[in-house]
Image (cartoon, rainbow, N blue to C red; front, side, top):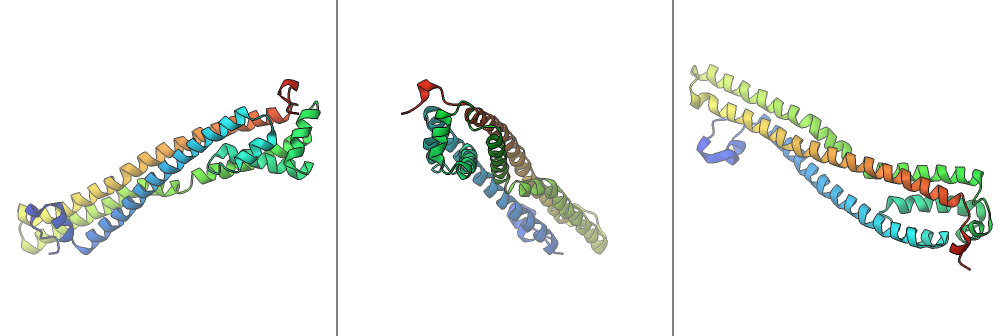
Length: 242
């Protein structure tokens, strides 16, 4: 039988001596596990860049007095969702007013900011940008969810197959001693462990990054409202730059 392995050789020898079905199950789970770990690391770097770039952009946003200055800085912070929202707002008002620099003049001279009609259009543009940023952050997360839900079942399939192999060995040799059933049971337990090994990191990574996306979604909502408030009123005279 394919599962007649020397148990003293360890897990590696059991895997190498496993039957074709068991090897297929283990290969699929190993591939899923490698991809999941790669995605977990990649998403960690992505959210790190998002946080770093957002902190830099927010510092410029708090300190700058002109809309055009912040708009120019937003183009340099592509990883920040706040910068993308600001760019969307700038592109919307620039298309209606004829340029970003004119926004500065409107905010300095107008007593009512951009006005309700323009603010509604800006709000819609920023909402679209925020939705695009959320979709970008959620990219690849469905694969983690798929691995988390399907990994144990794939491992369970290998477990059932290993137990079936043990029963076949008992029937072929007419004996139920340890030497006969151990190889099949070992295949079954290895498949179970492999399924859990792929699923546990996937579900932990998925839950963590989903919470990160939700947190950034709340932050983007707050930034959108703050920017709308700034555009809805004129600059204080003390803050106006000649």
